[in-house]
Length: 438
Image (cartoon, rainbow, N blue to C red; front, side):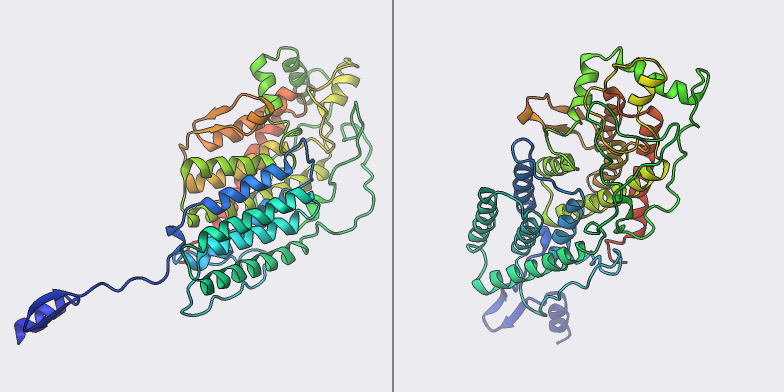
């Protein structure tokens, strides 16, 4: 009897009979977790979004914050299939409670992701062409038809409704971030060294109130400020004069490689308003082939960092109102016909936005894919530009940053400080937002 008890304790799936021993079948696990699905769904939706916002031909404006809301929608749609991870409700500012999954009910996480990304894409791209809207519908339908082969109708329906409700709540949340606020016309301050519309088009200030929008992570800007540029001066011996003169000197000795770097990150034509990061994310997914859970984590982290980095960056831009190089080069250095490689962006110079935002996003992607992610960027193959090769994602951020001094639209000071600033914001977010359960 003692021997029998011992046997039953060691091998609970063995039963004893007068016919000998026979292994019992292991009970099949009813539910798949998110890490058992590929990144097919977010990859296909990123491709769809990129095709729609590509300029030319569509020229649809897409606020960079959309990447954040898409990423959070994806993450929340599948996080209940990620046992080690937790919701961002209670961690992101004013984020609503997410719907609950039904106890004991099965969910097909790829279907949840598909429904969420379809809903959030439609919601943000209401100005898409009819052809684009048909493509959105077709992609959602095609993926669901594929999933129907693997899951019963009740689970499919339950998963669709769950993903849609997550995205609906996220979209409603997005409406309260300040981006829909009506602000008075912006009148730039006047004075020496302060920003003013620049030649040749003299466009009015772009998004002057972006810095008033809600941060997703309260405190993501804490302790991240960088020193502002040297005090304005027209003295040739001053740091300010030297800072601007470097931009002019570089412009007179640009190599073909320097010019190519500058034009690669012009991003219009191309993927304006942060779309380049959609492309980077898509290509990282194609190369790394992460499971759905890791794709959702990367998408959410990158989007949150981009959202907060842009808000903090523009808040600083309109706080300091530093002039662009073109005015000083023409009026002080005495080169009245000088032009940057392309039209200077219509907002103050400091800090450099490309340096700031690329550092924040690439730091987040590095937190998921590692420090030595070899990567070839094919973002602008469709424009006939040569792809760019990097030994790490942070190297891409460095490349994007330095491109702006080659273009003649930023100072080295603003580029270097912007890069540090963006990385510090990302580090703050990683410290404050607990994706993993404790």
